[in-house]
Length: 275
Ligand SMILES: [Zn+2]
Ligand SMILES: [Zn+2]
Image (cartoon, rainbow, N blue to C red):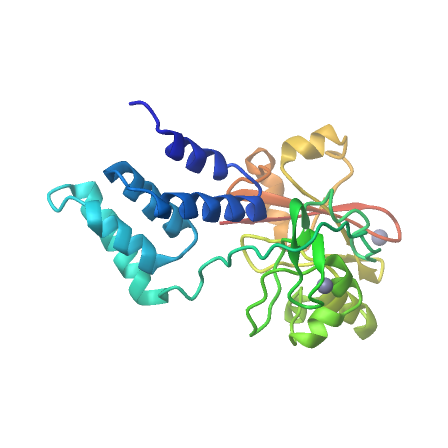
């Protein structure tokens, strides 16, 4: 079957980095909503809105074309309806708010010396407005932020200064999972002023030589070998079990590694979790 231009754009968008993908899906939806639609285009629209977790729209568009005697359609319709009833549009991705061109410098973080390379920020072509300071940023935080508030875009400066944690009463790392042996001031630095990584499970943060380690990268065992670390690396205590299944650890896989390094003795430490 020949893939339509719009379907191809949807497929291409799904391969883009997160922020770019959301922007592209919204722009695709805008175009499709403005034209006379074929059945296929209604289906693309519903897929776009499912991905954006905009279930009311996804349901409306899918209902226009779903065939009641088609098992796949019926299943999908049930899926959308179920999510609509559970979440409505509460988790819908926000449409990126464009601002004037700007280039933001990456500040220094004690527990992550190369945050962009480590994948904790996405560098975007189109800058967006930081929810905290209101200024444009082309570096957008992509890790977790635990807050009651709905925070979508954070610039690195508002993380480094502690402004975002204070303003939204939030934390980047949950302090309840941290070692009690580490001084409180270090914990505060980590939880309130450090960009964190996204784990499959609760993000743990290893410590060594009396301080937290720095986050280096998302890795699989392949990357560990490429870096020549396979003989010198230690597994974090919680991840010890994975040392028997090294080859199963795959970057961006369902069993993923998180590489850390001790700030003092420079030893590499690997934390692993699964979906
Ligand atoms: Zn900001
Ligand atoms: Zn150490």
